[in-house]
Length: 203
Image (cartoon, rainbow, N blue to C red; front, side, top):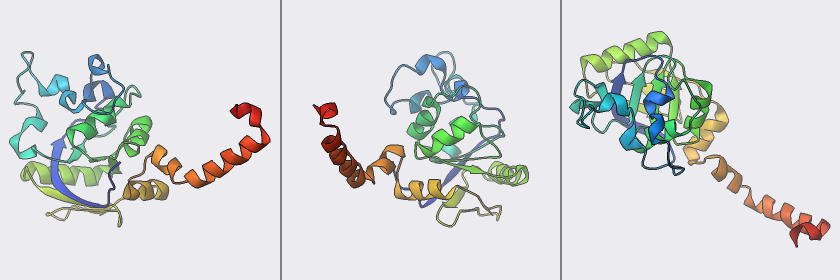
């Protein structure tokens, strides 16, 4: 995982609530177990017309939101099935931050495992952010994870909460496997003792 400390980016607006994981990455694209290659299918049914051309009415296809790494979305983002392909697609597309007033629990947890920071805003804070983006599409927000602070040009930023262990792991760029590997010396020591006590299990 890439370490996440302080990040500045265009903030893209998706003023939709209850965006479920089947809308994020439709089921027909769940054919791989690798984490890469799903970004091209992110929001497929909204992004593309039936002939495969870009749907110019879809918000993320606006030129102002090109290269955005921050996604500001409506309430209950990531609901629906528990597919981890959803955060895979979001990360592969290029988003590393989502701001919403609430998330489905499994999706929220999966974000931290895939280098995505899911920030929880109040409904009032979210509305202010959405209004700021709508009034100035292409506006850039700054996310300071170390100080747990979002800042915006119009002053609609706020302090956000995050579990301390998750914060530390994101700053260090550690997923569950990476965190486990920080204890490799202790693991090796345990295995060596286990081999001596139960050699027949290691034959």
